[in-house]
Image 1 (cartoon, rainbow, N blue to C red):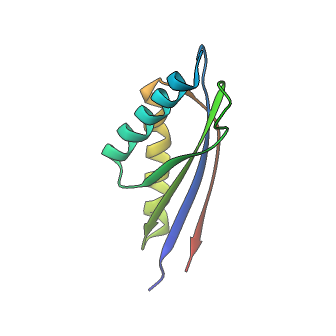
Image 2 (cartoon, one colour; image 1 turned 30 degrees about the vertical axis):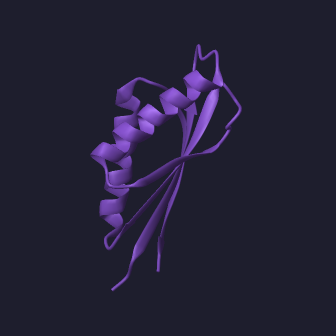
Length: 97
């Protein structure tokens, strides 16, 4: 039986952020709320000192590629519905092992 690993990169647009402390607060809220709803590993992985954007990495493991794809789609919609930041770009891949 195959194991599938999904890796996703979300680029978020942050507007009217005036400090790194404020940015970190928004990113932490997005990660915490998303992890409370979905069983995924998430962390801020890029644009750490850029006030206008954030990059979040997401990892997910399962035994059905279509379920992983569905979970990532719902996760992205959930982040958009939080209205804390705009989803600017999404890049994900699902690999079989």
